[in-house]
Image (cartoon, rainbow, N blue to C red):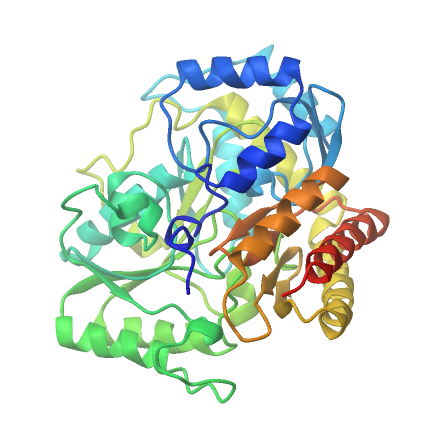
Length: 452
């Protein structure tokens, strides 16, 4: 039987879990508990975050540290730590900018904003040379949806079940996760959903001989609807779900045939995480719009970017975003420093190299652990899916592994109830990778020893 909490676990572990409370009772001391109680007293409660798990005192490199001095390799990081936490070059750039220009008011521009836009246009795939900034990825998704409507004169979208594009009303309308959509009421009209390109949950029963029926279904919907503005999807779902090699080419061709734009969301996975600067480079596809966020601010400042083709510069009479911090010079300085670090430290190459090592080690682990049903990864975007030997999802076992790993100094999240999702800093060393996988190996073995 499927765990009834699984529908809520799609984006991470939920704080309804009894196992979370049990872990906290064994690991949270009086000082941290007092802070957690104060946090719970002051913030609105919501699944996935409040009440919180623990209290942090420090975040540096690939590590976080709680207020009681315990250090954890952070293989979660909310996907903001491509350059690691508190990178000295990012911190120095922010401090310098604070001493010169700390804010740029509306109707004005500033040198850091123009430079960051130019840098993004230079490294972006294809002809994505127009840029618009926003305070966060959800807001950038909203701008992309508005631009698609304006550019096409249509309002319908096609997106995927099990997807995540942000938590605002427009973003959850195109998103496909129950924990964000349930009980909210009417969402945006015209938001059609299709199955994601996930072989292990394929409703078309393609199995290992994938026929790309999920991509063909998108074309079927585009043809039948006839007036879709855009197809929007995560190039690679950060659980991760990794589409077949030709999937996005097939979708790109369908969009071109039926006059729909292609919007790719790389908010958590862009800027090198997959072993390419942009995940769409793995698929040799250039979208009409590409959305970045999270790591763009160097793990410090919230900033996101919408990249679009020149031909989509058509909203001169409409405010797509017009956000107060649209051209925040401090955030842009953080973004420039982030791009410098990624280039100068070859973090894209490091992600590709360590990702290959990790896949080999996880494959070897799978051969020894009956609880491991699947391993997957692109660069330092990795996942280990746990299934019981009879094929049932191993939700409780996944939680046991996660909290066991926390006890040993490894932080990560579980998605879809059963997938150990591993997204470390791209500054990770091979020694740190070995340490993390060793912890996972031991924790999975301990759970298996209890009986499956």
